[in-house]
Length: 379
Ligand code: GLU
Image (cartoon, rainbow, N blue to C red; front, side, top):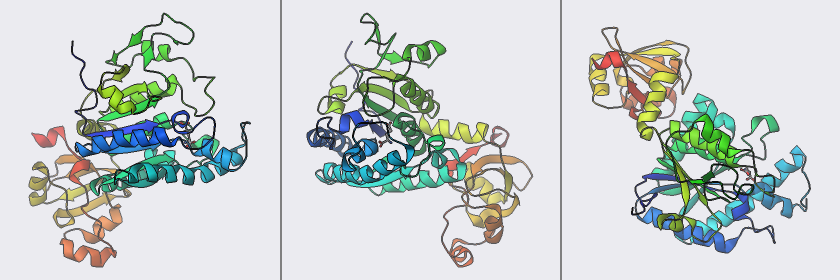
């Protein structure tokens, strides 16, 4: 069977780079030649028209050296300080890496709230989308300088999966120190079998992962967090590859058939996102629209204030709402881009007037990407 290139067909790719790959163990500085080679890999994806988002660790490891903290266990405050000093060095390395290919690096620092609290999720999602549309390559990390122990991801595997979900990516590549998932830990069990493909993450698959790698000096993810990441990504319609990152140009290696494990997604990202809006979220209010807007929505358009006749309830920006037609039937669910009181202030108004009322231009009340037609409404 000819090997299928696992990257070629992806539209938007999130590449997660761990500290152990990026930080030279000898010098404690960014590994320039490894990064330069990865830069060529990323540039090739971009030249084929694929969108790229990088999730990069390394801040704490780089900051340790800069602040002279050595290899010892750090207190929370020291870890935060190291992350702060290291993050700027990390971005300097990414700037140089991407600049070499005329790509624009754009730093995005996230906390779990940005991905778990809906209002901030919608906000961070818009930032990522706008960066990508404007040709930048987002370089994302956790905002470790202010993240407390209870309120942090702690590992960038799950952060990367959340970023893939937010960015509507269809491929997540976790570059790692192992070439995928084995039936048991291959360091302990030499006859463990490699799994090239995982259709669905079952309890058996989770049991194969074991705990984090205790020998890893830097970075905090293990196979367990990678499986957790693959699960989040799969639910968001994104495929996950776990592959070796150590060699130069790891993505090219993957494209030429390097061993990896692929975790399949259940559906396309857009469909998964709409299913999440339609099924999982509890509506916090109702936006009533006129017949013209109802027709526009059925045709896949965004909801503009001009077609809104009322907003009911106390929902906030980013909350899920029901969209109700003039006949009282619910036609869709969506994420409101404005809170209820602002929608009431601009309902029925034309786009030109809205900026004067609100003092800024908010865009549509609900963007087409954030709208899911109701089953009943589709009838
Ligand atoms: N965000 C952390 C850093 O930049 C790394 C987390 C991880 O190792 O996954 O140092």
